[in-house]
Length: 302
Image (cartoon, rainbow, N blue to C red; front, side):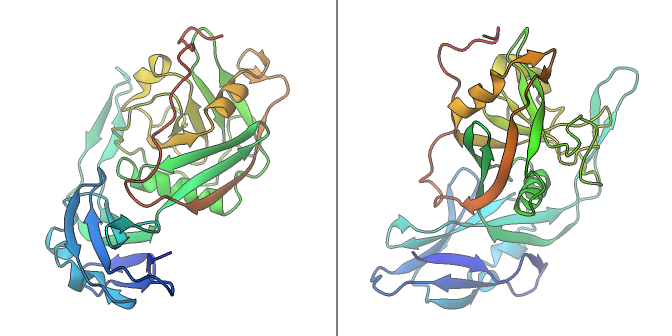
């Protein structure tokens, strides 16, 4: 499989941007690299790329000229007209707005920081395979909505943080709401020993969407995550919690986890996450659609 891969993770502004192009023996199609936005719209392309090391900043000078204004981009390899191999995610390193909670009204506001662009974080696009006691769920990350949150979750998962962690909170009544995990203590108060800021994600909370749990402080995100069980019950979370991915398989597993017998919102015999692993994403534009809630499922629970 032809593939493009970065030489390192971080590329400072106005510097070379070396990446490696691999082309297996036997492929006779011309190679090209296309720069896509998050909706897979082609912004630019360079044809007749040779295998070996190439400089993306030379191929696409706009990477520095636009100073990250186009948001998260994807560098996708093509063999002929066929996308091949996972893309490189190009996340602009830009100062973020800061969420502030009004203690009187409970409303969130965003304090803008001076916009500073310093370069890109670059990595091969990955899906996240979560193996649970009820089966597997495959999540597509959405760094275009929450780049730092998606990155944090992938790093924790790849490092083994979620191994043998229980779903300590499941809420299905009066509405099918969420299943929650990510605390090594299994109580709801633990985390990874650090916190990350809330991101202003525009990804709607819906069935199969994965989002960050937090305390009352909007910037207390860490390792605890929840998976939404319905749009109707989680709609009010939009803009208040950071949604960062979507399940693309495993809808039945999500529902099995949600159907665990409960005592309040605590599982009687908690299901668990067995492992979280990163797997190569499909080439851009070829992946499956996010899962949908079963048509018979309503917000009113089972």
